[in-house]
Image 1 (cartoon, rainbow over the protein chains, first blue to last red):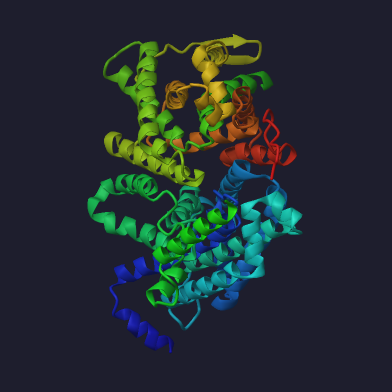
Image 2: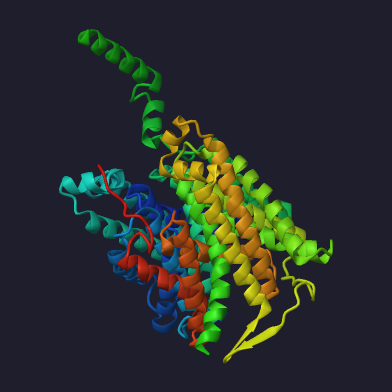
Length: 317
Length: 291
């Protein structure tokens, strides 16, 4: 099985394979942040910190204990989620921009601590050996991507997900409805960190080398841009946003040094023309159902609504 | 020793405060975290460098030129990247600000190269003055004096002039201010202009202090200044000054105590700790929650 997959991957240009895997890791991270920022409405500017914790944890687990990769990834996820819950309990009392700067501060502290620890090899960074699995890592990444999409979709339509959306809508109103706001916020934070940790572990093993400086503020911003660009709270949006922003620097490579210049301009331009994100206010399942003719077209809904309102107007007079 | 570190800390902290004021004023008016502010500070440092190195002007004139250029830049950035987004969600404006920040720092890297540059020698004659056990350079005194002057000038503008009154009204309630006949767009442009001028002054002073100007100096300074603004209570002008000084002093103190490899973490650790005790910063207003 493993050899067969390896052979199949051999047909793909290694450069494209790397882009494809990077897109996959980007999607995982964006989906994780989407739970925290998109679904629960808590702005986090330090998501890369959890990716960093995940990457180093999983690297250390492989190097020191030679743990099987699947157990390693799951354990990494739980450790990262544990750290996030510990951090989240005190700081999630803060709201809005105070929370944002706290997560940013936390990320900077994590980076500096990793730069000073012996187990993370200080500023030199860690060289991570290839994971001991038979399935090639590129395939593992995309299996995790699909698993994440499925899990997050379930969460969106579950009781838990609806509670998170209630917290996003209005914390006080949600509390009045019997939702334990702090508990749900910490849970969503931990869940987002779990996904980020797994993403970090995959990143470490795919790249083969990690350095604390790779997970700085700019990485957090990268992930946040994916989520906002795609449309807050939209799973399809996060996937599309992550795909565009992970691939963009590669496709812009022909511009050499103008690359990041264009990237910056692109962010501004996209926000000005689609302020709610590419998929903001659009439901992907709705689109699919509509295309299949299972759901009335938007126009007909609007017409029905307007006729209803005019009817009720008549009733009032 | 203690006095020496205190002076070092105040000199560094007053430059943080200068940058933090820009964050806090913009936030107070349109609740936007202007992430491009750090890059404006960087541009200020570069303009000051070129004014002294190429135009060979006096240091003070160089600072004025830097402030002028940054005022134009700040207003331009607001016009292009933030004004179209004023009615949309705050996160979109935040991403737009980050886009501007990436754009400006890359542009600076392409134009000026990746290496750090120093101010030409003799721009400002540095002498050491010994007071008690401490050695204070005239440069540090200059930084403290200029920062203090600028902050007093800012207080004057905000509290004693008509445009300052308009700024305060707009930050109190954007829509009502507009209804009262205040030209809100003009007030916002003016706020960006003031903030950018202060950031440019900070950039020139820091460039002189560390004698290094580079394209990526805006990122960390911007983050720390933002931390200072939040520490003091974002939206509050005295809070930004207090937060900046506090961060500068603790950072220098931490380095003096031997935590120099944790330098960048100290500021953020203080910030997180203070916010846990006082969730809206030291001088921040209590947020009234309403349903």
